[in-house]
Amino acid sequence: MKPVRIKPHRFLIQVKATVPQIPEMAEAPMSRLRTEPFRPWV
Image 1 (cartoon, rainbow, N blue to C red):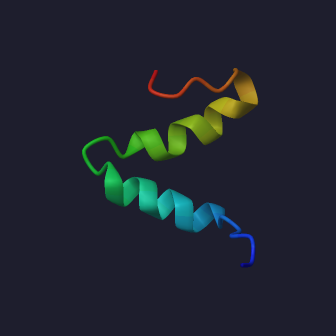
Image 2 (cartoon, rainbow, N blue to C red):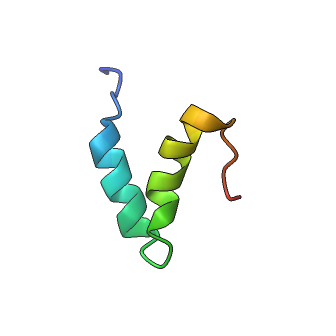
Image 3 (cartoon, one colour):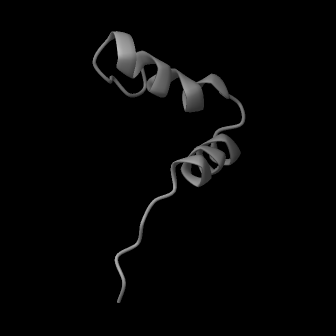
């Protein structure tokens, strides 16, 4: 079996589709990575 490569844009689309009630959750972690450590669900 080939190793599955995760495509970032597909992953974000999946996240947005999974959590439509909080759309900012998809973008927030990515933008936060530049300024502060990654803290999911905060």
